[in-house]
Amino acid sequence: MNVYNDGKWGSYRYLPLGTCTSIAVWHAHINIMTRGDLSSFRWIEGNLDPQSLQLESGEVLSHIYYSSLNFKDVMTATARLPLELDRHLNLHYIGVEFSGRDQEGQRVMGIVNSGALATVVCVDKTFLWDVPDHWTLEDAATVPLVYATAYYALEMIGQMKEGDTVLIHSGTGGVGQAAINICLHAGCAVYTTVGTKEKRDFIKKQYPQLTDCNIGNSRDTSFEQLIMTETNGRGVDLVLNSLSEEKLQASIRCLAPRGRFLEIGKFDLIGNNTIGMEVFLKGVSFHGVMLDAVFVGSYEMKKTLHDVVAQGISAGVVQPLPRTVFPHSKVEQAFRYMTTGKHIGKVLVQIRQEEDNKVVVPVPRLMKAYPQYFCNPSYSYIIAGGLGGFGLELAGWLVLRGARKLVLSSRSGVKTGYQSFLMRIWRSYGATVIISLANITTKSGVRALLSEANRLAQVDAIFNLAMVLRDAVLENQTEADFVTSAGPKALATCHLDELSRQMCPHLRHFVVFSSLSCGRGYAGQTNYGMNNSVMERICEARVRDGLPGLAVQWGAVGDVGLLAEVQEKQQGIGGTLP
Image 1: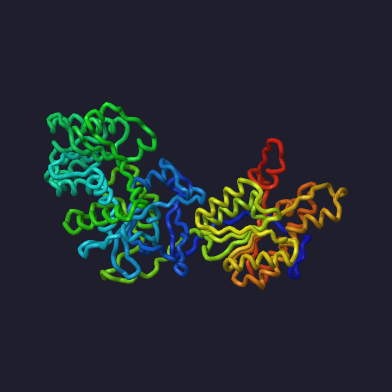
Image 2 (image 1 turned 180 degrees about the vertical axis):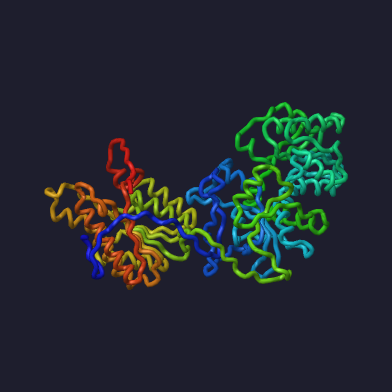
């Protein structure tokens, strides 16, 4: 018992950190915490806030009722698809297709580049379609992505015309059925492949125009012989392919002279697999169909695709597909079912129940989700010691979390090319970065720092990472060493605490980076440990006063920061046991 606090004696102890508690949030999305482990799906708090939501020009907010799974989602979840930028946040946004209601209560369906397996989503209105009155929202969720993909591949890229012969692989899949509908309506001769007798029977029942002579096996290359026999050796004008490896090679050989090969699968493209050049002697063309490209394409391309799908809906070509529906609590089971390849049509996740009325302003759907930290792009964030190794990492993390106004305090300013490089990266995200040379060991310097940040925007968070080491065994320590070490730690935190109470009335976070030298002690770091302890006591006082205050005791950090910089030789730094 060596700590006297609030009239009681006690001691400080390290306790295990409890598991994260889920909270009810307006915007939640599905995230896979460990890629390749389907049991690690979790609902995670999203970054959309109804109080501060700012839509981009041409964007619409949609409340999601049903989200549809597709093979891009499966490949992302099973670690077979390379990650995008969000890997830095350990966020793997899943879902590109949905149905729901807009803010006026109109029923809509649409596609986004990612993040549709969620409660709400911001969507470009050129990728949004009204739901016909005779469809349910469950019907609508089976439509937009598969028909957009099929129209984009067959008409916009493949230039399909009446009388063409078309081979459509995986005919019972979502894109397969959409493509068959489109081709039959356009007056094309259709051949398709399936993997089981059940799926063959489904095709013949769903499309009476197709007989066994039009249906091949997708599990081997025997479809090549079928195609060449039925076309008298000519081949087909278009192949819509989702098969891989030797089945892809066989599909290429099925092309007629001047045929067009439309590759919608990603396996061979990601694997950089090769094809023989001899086939191009027939004047054929090979197209990698990436619907992702449309999202960053011209407005004219987006509008063309939107109009083609809308015309298909009006003409009755676009029809809802068979589907299997899972509740939002069984996302793992939905993915496992889809990976078996047994499904016919689409696999949907239901987020909420559809109302009876056609037009209903949706009540917010609160979802239990794990909380996440996000920054407000309209506020400013102060990092004392922001140009050190640890500070640069924190600044980058804040930018990825949404911060767009940073004030980095540093004694020496920008001195290295790496610091300049990172600031260019952050500014490419639209962030404003100010370097403050104010002396935070003085009250006037901290006042200048906070004034600088307030001129930029209201301060949302303050982080103190600054430090100076004056290590020596106790008998060799001097008063000057203690004073120098106290400056960026104890004194700066004291000034930040006092002045932020006056100058930052809406402060959401006050965070100091402490050290295990305070909690456990390291030889030669008595002064450093003491000053970290002062910071922790300041945070305790802030919490007692109802203000934000958090101290994090870090162990040795080997990748970046002072320890990594001062070591001239190769080093290995181990972790710290609890």
